[in-house]
Each structure stands twice: as C-alpha cells, then as structure tokens.
Length: 115
Length: 117
Image 1 (tube, each protein chain N blue to C red):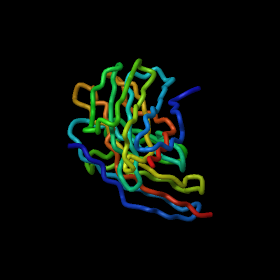
Image 2 (tube, rainbow over the protein chains, first blue to last red; image 1 turned 30 degrees about the vertical axis):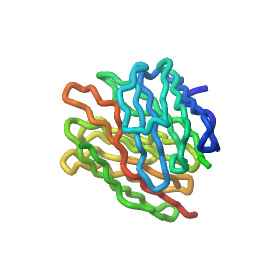
Image 3 (cartoon, rainbow over the protein chains, first blue to last red; image 1 turned 180 degrees about the vertical axis):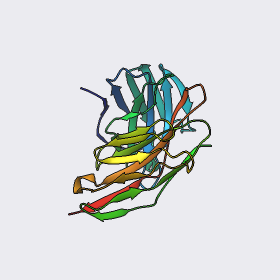
Image 4 (cartoon, chains in turn blue, red; image 1 turned 90 degrees about the vertical axis):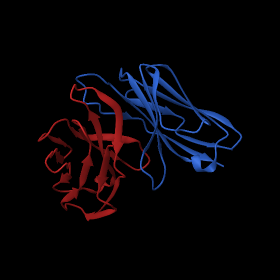
C-alpha cells in the first residue's frame, strides 16, 4: 500500500452503535488530520496530531474521539452519533518542518451514514 | 484570520474550452498556496502548489501563479477534457517569517467543474 489508506470506505451505523474509522499513512509523515466533508459545506478540520500529540481540536463534539497510537496510524472512534453526522470523513497527513511546503496528502475517505 | 474565496460554481464547459477558476486569499505572513482536486467518490488530490510570490505551479496542463500584489492564485487550463470534471479546492497554509507553519490548511468552498463532450 502506498499513500494514505482509510477503512472502511463505507459505513452505515445506528445512533446507538459504536464504530471506529481507521487511517494509515505510508509516507513517513509526522502529522495527521481528520476532516469532515458535508454536502454544501466547506471542508471542516476536526483534529490535528503532530508526532502523536493532539495539537488541534476544533470544538468537535465528544461523540467523536480520536486516537493516534503512532505517527502512521490514526483512528476516529464514533459513538452515539446523530443523523447530521452523516458525511465523508477524510484523513490526511503531512510532513511538517522548517523546509516543508506543508502540503497534505489525503486518503479516499469513509462515507458515513447515520440512521 | 486566514480565508480563501473561490469563484462560485458550478462551472460548465465544452471539451477543449479554456478554464479559469478564480481564487483570492487573506492571510498574514507568508502563506503557501495549493489547488486540490476531488474526483467523484474519491478523496482530495494535490494538483499543484506555490510557496512564494511569483511562483507558478503547474501539473497536468493546469497552472496557477502566486500573485502577492492581488492576493490571488487563479487556476487555468488551456483546453479542458471530460476527465477534468471534478471539484476544485483552493487552499493555503500560513507560514511565519521563520518558515514554520501551523499545520492547518484553510480551504475555499470548492468549485464544481463539469466538462461536456
């Protein structure tokens, strides 16, 4: 595998379910991100991790819980979601540093539907 | 704060037409600028980038020039193809004078491009 991979690609869950989204990057990057992409809304940054440490939480509800066990893996744990949480969830990674241009590389996304 | 404004879509063109998608930005410091493309059912792919004023990014026939005086980064292509149909996002990362960044992309709202045969 190369680049950024995400599993599952599609997920349907009820409001009482607990599920997790997984992201893995094979690029040797030191930063990882979760974004939410809803219809007719701009991309929303949810969480940022640098060297496994969370550096950004953009007022995301606690029903979304990120986990970054190492710099290559990122999870998003979901519980008690609402129908308005249905969206495409995108993971990205980047190599941050003094000489970096900071472009982010995205995975294909997980299409989440909450019923 | 930082912001990116893209021309509103959707944009509909015939094959081989000339494409321009306007993008202007507001940022302090020295932002890096990007264009990303999202094909149906996929994630975002980096299309091109420019890291300093007057740089021109280019890829797959697309070009954009970093214009600091007009705070713009317009995307152009001389002859579009049906396969270019996608959503295009302009974005920036703000860098401070020391060259470090805050690791956060600011995106425009996206412009839907449809190219007909």
